[in-house]
Amino acid sequence: MTTPKRTTPRLRRLLVTLVAFASLTTATACASGEEQARVVVTTNILGDITREIVGDQADITVLMKPNADPHSFGLSAVQAAELEQADLVVFNGLGLEENVLRHVDAARESGVATFEAGKAVDALTFQAHDDGGPEDGAGQPDPHFWTDPDRVREAVGLIADQVVEHVDGVDEKTVRANADRYDRRLADLTTWMEDTFGTVPEERRALVTNHHVFGYLADRFGFRVIGAVIPSGTTLASPSSSDLRSLTEAMREAGVRTVFADSSQPKRLAEVLRKELGGQVRVVELYSESLTEQGKGAATYLQMMRANTTAMTDGLTGD
Image (cartoon, rainbow, N blue to C red):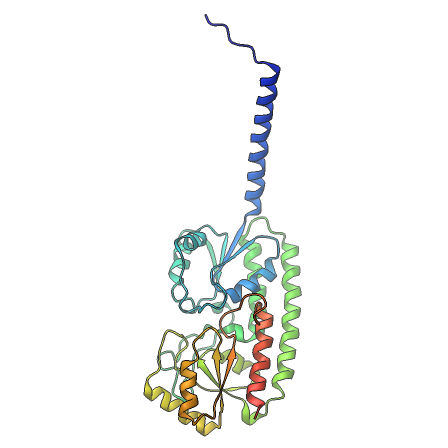
């Protein structure tokens, strides 16, 4: 029989150290696992809003990059997998994220909790405007609810409810306090927008945009939507020559001389209107569907709305 070798003190110390290290590593992994509750958000506008609500209570992954088009951005295989590993997915819905919704559906079918913000806040429908548009979308839900800060306030409370219900480990009091704090900032934004838009004379409260995106803002703050260069609720559509002709006629009748174009989209079509109307049209950029990088003018929802309100007011009241 072979006699087992005795464990030396040095070896015993080494074994104790390895066991302790393994235990510490396991404990750290478990602890970090508890801290890795994840909320995945599709658009960067909703991403900013959700971060204000969640704070440091969970990781927030935003799929849409700054300056992207929500109608056309897509996901990598890694991002698609992140959706199915989330505790909660927050998405705009109502057809906005056209290339992403199937991945959201797949996540829901795999058991992930999902929240469609646009559907939950009393959605408006696209209307036929003075230019006859939106050509293919009249009567369909309008997904651009964030242009009305009051609807965003409603969404904030609902997102907080979803986070508390579906994201393990969050502190409900903290989430509710964050939501209440942000709600107050949104209320201040609404008041400021009312005061600022109040300087626009009634006869100049007419909007022409790159595509139909400001229906909620118009409804909330008393503007008329004359039409859009792209007669649809999506940037993936394209105008015909008859669409542009109808729009220029509507603009002449309304006396409109300003077109608002999304900063993330080419302005070529809006420039066409400038030529059609004899060079008397101004093209004013807005941040209508995407936030920007930090320091680029609209890194947060609040910055975006204030920048847009100022640009719209100046565009409609300037000579």
